[in-house]
Image 1 (cartoon, rainbow, N blue to C red):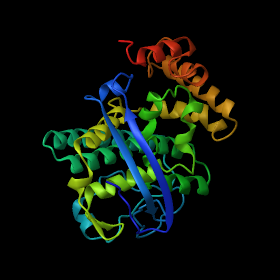
Image 2: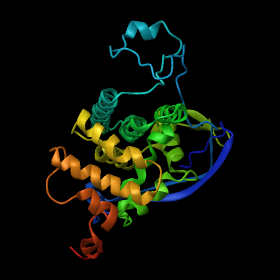
Image 3: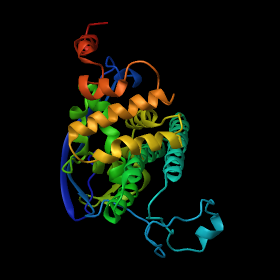
Length: 318
């Protein structure tokens, strides 16, 4: 199946495969072994990647709405949701991250239930939504550091963009291919990368019928099979976390990363190490070796373990 659309204005080309070997560290979670290939001759995407809810009215810069939950009857009376676009306090950032964490876990669990019922397209769609919810965590951390109007506006634009929230979905594949340190994951964040658009297109064809290519009617049950749904659910599970974020964690994040945010990369790496060390001192991260320092400077498993990991993943090593 070659999902192709012609609704947008930008033509993007993608040819690739997503392979998770069963004898790899993360691939072992994807049993039985399988291979998923995503191919298309043309994927047209809208010039604006963000499908945003418009504002019915604007609030003053820095103002925040009440923390009271939105009631269904209020939503039913509006054509557009009143999306907030101002600055967030530390408490509000922590609350937003925890809301995203809880919802990502719920969506992942719902996707698993649908998968067990062999409802593969719906399972895949919910798994992608779970990945997007998990992607809000890093964006909210960026919003915690935003100072200017432009930075805050950019943060909210990313928060409501599907393709900005699903950037990390190929991270497990990079790990399988040998990625271990920060530099190895840089391709995920390149503007020219097509993988966020691929996942968004998968979500669309898993949810909806459409007329694609040369007047071909796309049916979700014909496009999304069990192996693809299983892979997406496992990726969602990897990103869905149980541990909530505290106000203190966000305060320490701002303290250490704020002064060097988006500046010298070496300063950023040292700030991450310092942040994690103080997290350990506060009992918010496991005691012992500074895992962030190990990751940023030595690689995900450390230099001494890299060769051992490669050997363990080679065919016939088990």
